[in-house]
Each structure stands twice: as structure tokens, then as C-alpha cells.
Image 1 (cartoon, rainbow, N blue to C red):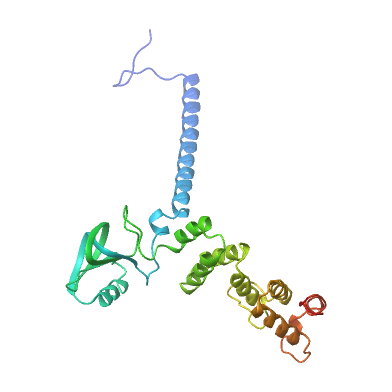
Image 2: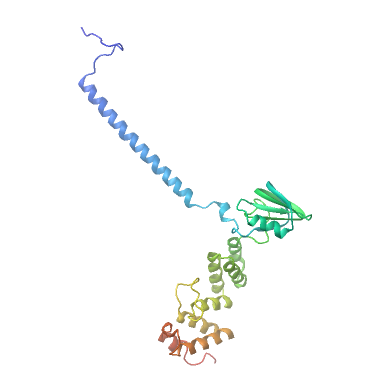
Length: 271
């Protein structure tokens, strides 16, 4: 007869059961490790996606020293301070404080600084200025450069407005919009855009912040093509470029190749 030992009343395990339990414990351990590893990987991927994707609000924010302008508007949000001061001083107060999301200014010189802006409404005579676009509201008088670029891509057929946008973008240190706008303007036949880009490559006016290296041939070709189209400024620049290229004592002599001299500097472009 088999006896039952122990307070729990369990029978001694057989060797075969011991092996089965060990095998099951090992399998469970491996499964747990794989689940943990998968969880860590999934978390890392999610974090990378989150960190790598800018939020829509960030893409529509003004530079630190600039505010979007909304005339005849009063803001809805959390007011952090209120003083009596002219509009220009009110704007400066906000620009100088990183925690300022916007300002509201009334005709009575009442200046409100906002820690948070969640909307706006019409109020004739009032002025609002914000770091980010007001959600679900009309466009500011100075909309984001990128938004203006997208609009002009569809509407500006001769590149005139695109060229003006490029100059504004460069002035506001937005190189990405500036480069896109000026090259698109050139592609649409805008002579001013083509002339500016040619100057970037011209060894005499090389723009290191716009192109990788000076290239007299690129500059000469653009001047030549524009001169053929009747652009007198380009013809003057081509003439002076060729004169500089033929001057062996020029400090830029090494920047000129034979191709420039024999292709764009021989003969006359006049009929």
C-alpha cells in the first residue's frame, strides 16, 4: 500500500514527471524572453516614430522672433499677464518670453500676454499676434512661408511671386523655402531668378551659403542665355566676366577654364 507523506498530502514525483516539469519551465522561460524582447523592440520603434515625426503644430509655428499677425481679432486662451502699453511694446514683451504663446492688444492700449491660445474671434480694432496659427481661424496677414510656397506652386505661372517669396524666405533665414521658390521661379522663365542664381556661381560674387562651389561655366551659360533673350544686365555681366577671365593677373584666374573662354566669350551675341 502506498502511503501519503507530508502535510500537503502529495505523493513523491516520479523521475519522468521531474523531466517534464523542467522542460516546461525551460520553454516558458524562452517564451517569456521572446515576448520581452518583442516588447522592447516595439517600444523602440514606436519611440523612434514619435521622435522622428514633427507635430503639425511645430510645422506651423513662427520663428522665435516672429509672430503671426491677426488684425481685428481677440484671442481665447489663458492670460498670463496684462499691462497698458502700445502694440509694438506689447509684441516685444511676448517675443522676449519663450512661454508667451501670443498677445492681444485693444484700442485702449490694453496688452494681454497669453500662456495658451486655443482660438480667436472677430473684434474690430483689436490686434492679436501668435507664435502658432490660431486653430480653425482665418489666415494671418503673414502666413507661414511653406504654406505660401504650396499655394504659389499652383497659381504663379511666370514665377514672379515665387521669386519675391524666395527673397523674403532668405531674409527670414528659411533656406529650404528660399531655394525651392527661386529654382521653381527660374524653371517658369523668371529672368530675375535665373540671374540671381547665376551670380551665386559667378567667382566674383560666389554665394557660399547658397551653392557648393563657384562655377564660371554655369554663370557664363546663364548670362549668355539671358543676353540672347535681351536681358541687358546679363549681357553686361557676361562681358565683364569674360574680361576678368582673360586677365591673367586676376586673383580669380584659377577659377576660369578654357570652356568658358571658347564657348561664351568668343564672337558677339548680337545678330
